[in-house]
Amino acid sequence: MRKFVLSWSSSFIVFLTVLQVTTGFSCNIRSDIAVKEITNDPWPTPSSMISGIPVYKTFEELESLFHFENDTTYIINFWATWCKPCVEELPYLEDYHEKTKGTKTKVILISLDFPKQIESKLVPFVQERQLGPDVIALLDGKFNKWIDKVSPEWDGTIPATYVYKDARSLFIGEAFHSVVEIEKALNEL
Image (cartoon, rainbow, N blue to C red; front, side, top):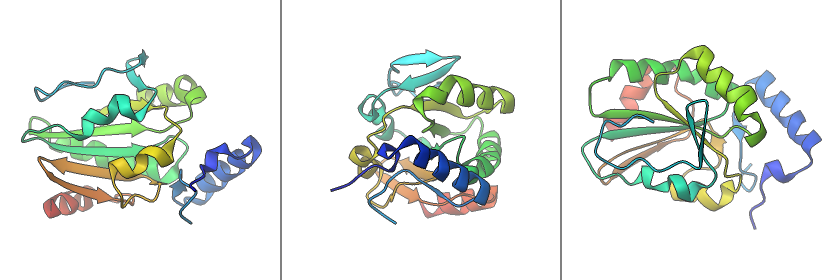
């Protein structure tokens, strides 16, 4: 049976978060393993908006985002402000977003920040950096129920990126370190 690491005591969570942020190791949200439109697809309706950021309470509310059928390439990145490797890769996703503006490519950043930190951490982070890609918040802490819906290859570590176009898809379970790495990964698709 899967257990979720964030269901442990809050002091242990704080310890792990500090350890991950200070050491730079990948951040794991799964413990069973050691809005702008450029298409005609309907954007999933969020539960709410906080300072311009769409907020989804459950993965099911957001799931249609993974099934658009058109000629657009979707790059969906899972990240959190408390995850050092996630924050380190954001400039490359931002650069790629800027490089592909006006094309049929869509970069979407899905924040897995803690619900209580959306207003205090995520919103200021996004505003300070003026991120160009769409940023949305997913509050569904039942990660083990939906991770496999994104990709059976995903072990729960973030950052993680799911890319798809039409019926083809690609899962990248590690951080990007350059725009060239992103382009190379997309060439595989």
